[in-house]
Image (cartoon, rainbow over all chains, first blue to last red; front, side, top):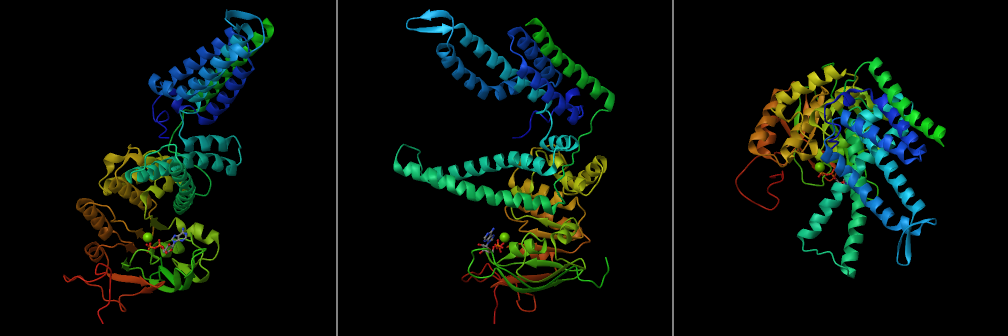
Length: 250
Length: 243
Ligand SMILES: Nc1ncnc2c1ncn2[C@@H]1O[C@H](COP(=O)(O)OP(=O)(O)O)[C@@H](O)[C@H]1O
Ligand SMILES: [Mg+2]
């Protein structure tokens, strides 16, 4: 929640946030449309180029991909064996099917590439900048506020949870599988929501006290128009090109 | 600002928290003049924070009238305008720090007031410098210590150049050095302020009048005589009367 990816310096970070959001939507949509493995590899390469252009540290990128990897591992364990189709390898009573494996490859490449696109293009801006970008894309201010506040309150709830759990542990609470533990967790959950919503109300009050009226402003300055439009056109055209190539090849 | 108009005038303000038995503010009358520097010393739960939040329009009173900087406050619109002219330092700095980095947070107010990014930056840096925390500019707010957070929150409030400051327990959890910085900063200000604190030394150093609160009412310095003395008795650390 500390927006570490956004607090770096690169050509990508200085790009107009509006352009970045539009580009992210277009390229992700294009990636989602593709089915051919070669084309998808093309998308992965392009997303890696964008990540490189944003100068994101590989370790940080990998850390953010980790939850997705677990999800993909689960898919790889189940899908190839349960999907109907021509068997690829026979392992005793179960068969590894070709369409199953293909589907897994497909899902893996697509999800990784879309996540990378968003990391390179959207995670490189702070929440306030994202708010500004959505505002100039004419997303209603109420909706932006809702979105950004949800994001802000996730970290509020998270820190309240750690505080409560710490308090319980200091008083000798050892989590186990008994009624006492479950009851303690139920109390914790209850307190969590009471406290988080109180704090959320105070944070909002504090923002109002500092002249906040639903619109976000930022300190960031962005590079002028021509470069932005060139970037948008180039990246979007490449993505669309990949879709067209696939349709023509089929 | 006209000099004969009180900065704040509360008349018969009453406020009861939903679900509470007794009113937290019960017919509060308070007038603050331009030259006033007021300290409030009162027990926990006596309604000090509620009083500040009422002045800012965060708590809507059940009865009574509020005038801030000469303007009667009736609707949310009135309060919205006044909020940028009155700076409230929240009791808990964590409620106030909202942006990822210190400089973003201090600039939040000035940007909302319509400053350009360059002006906001310049203003915010000057304030950080004045409070002796220029080195924290690029720090992550939630990784700061309690005392640092409070100074950053104060900088964020002062960056809006308020005409009146309301400080809710600014000294809680501060070490002697930071407390001195804070006291020096307050004394050097040319605007009126109200400070809530439990520390007699601090309050008497930075204010010229000391009030207390009891049963939802404000006791002004004519009604209480607060002083420091060496003997001990029950509740001795709270202001009390010697009749
Ligand atoms: N958000 C709230 N909801 C309900 N009751 C509250 C709330 N905040 C404060 N109170 C009650 O109002 C009374 C005064 O609280 P407060 O103004 O915070 O006192 P102080 O700042 O003097 O310690 C307390 O009895 C407290 O329980
Ligand atoms: Mg309080």
